[in-house]
Image 1 (spheres, helix red, strand yellow):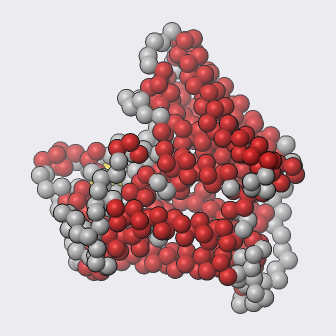
Image 2 (cartoon, one colour):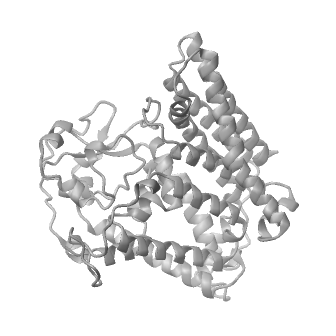
Image 3 (cartoon, helix red, strand yellow):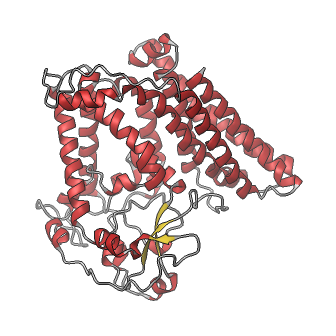
Length: 473
């Protein structure tokens, strides 16, 4: 079935809504609200939203390639790195988890090819392309961590040069297309996209999830329509957290048992429970997010002109020094300090469990702190530049237009009166929030558990103070 048939396929609008909205304690199933159910069950709203964002990405690329080379006068820089990046960190992720992934346009061209718009090799599954399984050795978030590190290494020019931004977006779309024709499902989104890694990591703290309503119903149902339809290759019954689910809602649309719930839940519901896995990919991603927030704050809001010049002069000896510092911070210093905190807590408390598993398990505590750290950085980086959004709306290419009369807007928002207090409050919130996760992980209700928790709390406190110093001074 090609994309047009999938979009126009009739969806059962009168499915049973007999289950109560509050079917699970502490959860509100939004899919049980009739008006919202109709919206989620129809493919058209999501398709139109993705079409709009695709058109926006195309315009961003054109503006980056042919518009003004001055970043503050180019739609590509202002709307990608100021408007969209701010909305992602302040709205999409904190309240919707991977909600951006549900309307992201980057995988659309590849999916069109994969599902039959252009003749290609036909796989046994009926999809176009080779439809190979993603290599086991590359699963997890290692490639996403690498991608985010590359963004950090070249951030000074990527966030200021419209042409570089355009080529980065073109490269991401091209890579997504290529992977769609070789691998099945959304291999690019689930294992390569650095923004997917960023949103998936912090989606575990967000108050939105897709789960099955009654696990026994799924277990007894032999035809796994949800798994077949999911472009991410996920089985809803197996979901333990929200890191991998892209909220595409295909499982809800095809489930013949009406057994998919879209739950509104308490914040950080995925965090605080022991995990048996010893995989460290998510740990390095979480630490990389913390390190990148420190580096971005130092480069873009810090007072060190030499550091800014080193970050901009790519290929120079100073830049190699900056790159070594960034990689050392993300790959050696922060991982080493976090591992030391976990190890010392284990030793002090007298626990003899495997250190690797303990590190992977306690990395959950880094997520609330990291999310609040990125929001705090955004306040100092993006808020003062809010007036540029109105300016480039009237003159998106920097060619002297004034479409809406705002091209010469002189208003400059002054955030200095409230931003220090707000940033300090956010970092305090992240510290307390992470402390609660640490408490849940260590069951800090006796002396030995408290000893295990204190080094982790010390790591989070030291990070919070370091970022607070960079942001406020």
